[in-house]
Image (cartoon, rainbow, N blue to C red; front, side, top):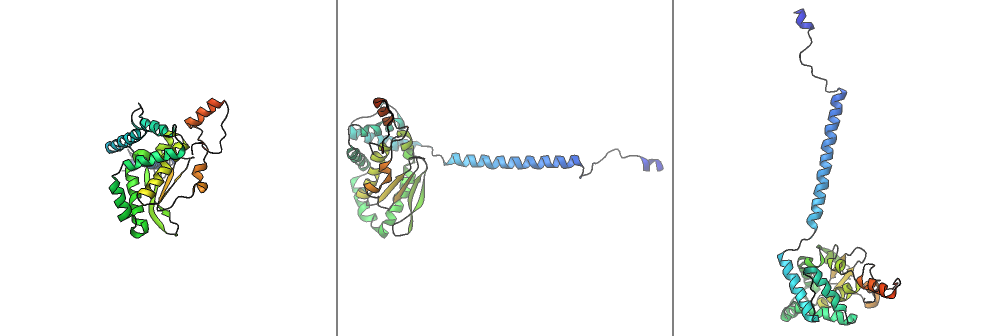
Length: 266
């Protein structure tokens, strides 16, 4: 019995408080925490990718119809397929036309996309409801849903009205594809901003001001808000973008750096 009492156990269990165990626990905890952080980062990256708009079949139909109307109005179409061809046609609208003529052409194109009776009924029956709030909220939602193929990811947001109230009648374009691809302030102003404002105000009875940001290519639509007079519209005073193909051509032609106070086509 004394012999058994003095024998060491065949299996030794180290103390839970030994340095080796503590070190292993720290490694295990760090590993778990690292995996958790990585999972959060991957989830965040995935959500950002999900926000990026991917055009579908319906969007391709919208693009082809819109491009067809543009080409029909100006009597010219690009040989390039898809969106690149649309941008070519947008630039062509500016060729040989004054700014006002380009804007008028773009308004005609927008009107041709809708039956005239539908626009008239909307202006008469819907626009006056609740002081214009219903019509403004409706067109904001339709714009955000149906125009992402043209502009990129859009979200409906609230905008401040002149009377101090706030309406969910805004559309925020995170990064306008049309501006980014055209690379031209003049194309943005004369074939998008001004004609779109005119179209909604005059043919649908919904005031609209569009506020493009030429630094990050975002754009804020404010339905229900009247645009400022031309002399107070800062977008009309923007200089050419450095990447503007028209500005590059002028630089090459003049053999010097162009230093315009504003885009000559805005």
